[in-house]
Image (cartoon, rainbow, N blue to C red; front, top):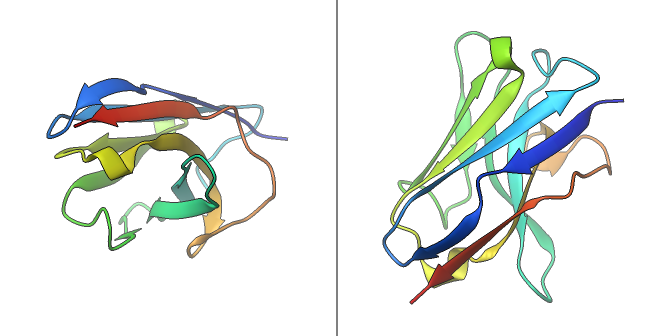
Length: 120
């Protein structure tokens, strides 16, 4: 079973940037579409961004992050990234990566996530 480890979170002021990474072990991610999700306190886990596995990448985003976040991947490193710019306090959440089908996780299996906190 693939194991996912998210990293790169932290505390940042509004307007700042962070780059999250999701490293996989145990199985290659290269044939999976991958996505990022986030869960704020007291709320459900929501889809943030997705990227196809094919060499010609297609990406898709939640409306709330479109134009500010960019998802990418490096199949050679078995890693998926999320570049987050122009961060807002409402982006505060624990961020998770997962294999996806569209905007939904392919499996109900999650890593530990990485905390992103945006101060106003």
